Image 1 (cartoon, rainbow, N blue to C red):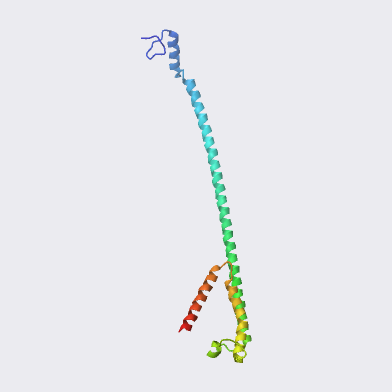
Image 2: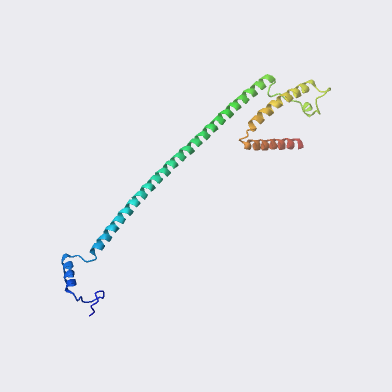
Length: 192
């Protein structure tokens, strides 16, 4: 066998090496044991450091989640307040429209009361189909035409006040369709 102590199976020449090896084996310690203990304590220290860093990271994540939750609650409250404000505005518009309709009904009732004519009065076909009011016209037809000319702007004003809501263009469209429908009915009657 070789006397090189680094080779496997080598035999040591000195007894001093054998005595030191015997002492180490009797105590149960190897020459690498202090290094192993040092490495073990270093790895334990590093493990403790990693656990501390993980705990810090978990704490930050929890704080971020809590912050996000608070932001979500604030956004939800803000959205709820916007919806409540919209609802209040819609309620105010509804009340204003109701009040305006009531005023229009009252005004229509006053206008009908001031006219003094019964609502079911008939107009002769001659007065309706005459070419116009002039010197040779029937005085009753002239009076009826004058009353109609004065009442028409008030009616038109009431209708346009209801339709001229800038936030509701669908009312204009509906009024246009209704007017076209009535015009078609009138033209159809005339064509018969």
